[in-house]
Length: 153
Image 1 (cartoon, helix red, strand yellow):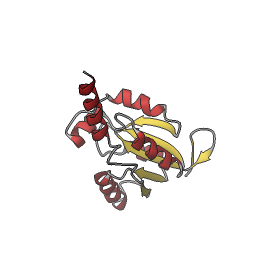
Image 2: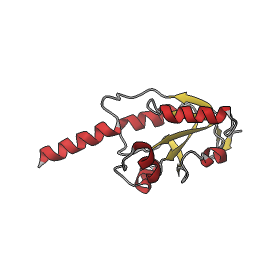
Image 3: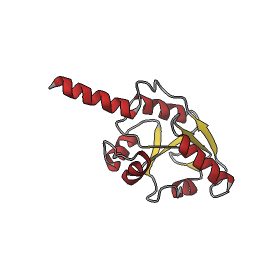
Image 4: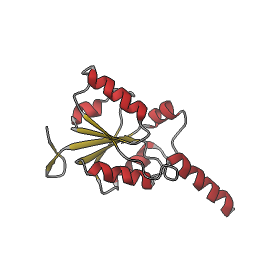
C-alpha cells in the first residue's frame, strides 16, 4: 500500500536511529534512503538509548527530533515507541521498506525474526552503505568535539 505523505504517492521508507550529534554519516543515510521512497525517520527515545547503548545520548529526544525534522530528505519524523521492540509505529505506517545503517545488526535480526513470525507485515529490509565510518560515527564525532574543546581552553 502506498501512502500519501506530502501530496504525492510514494513508497514509505522507514529509518531508525538515535540521530545524536547529526553528522555527515547521518546525512548520507538520509540521502541513500530517499532513493528508495518517501523517508520517515523514527528517532529513538531517551529511555531506549539508555537500554540499547547503556549510556545517555548527548541531546534529549525532543532536540534530536527537531534536528531531524530540518533534514530536507525526511518527510516525517516520529519518536520511537515507549516500549522498546513493540514496533507500533511500523504497524501503523505499514512501510514498504526499512533502510538500516551499517551498524544496526541487532535491529535487523529482531525485525527479520518478527517478520518471519508474522508479528510484523512483510517489509523489505535494505542495509545502507556507511559513509566514512572511521570518521563519521557519533562516538568518534563526540570524541573529536571533546578534544577540540579541551585544546581551545
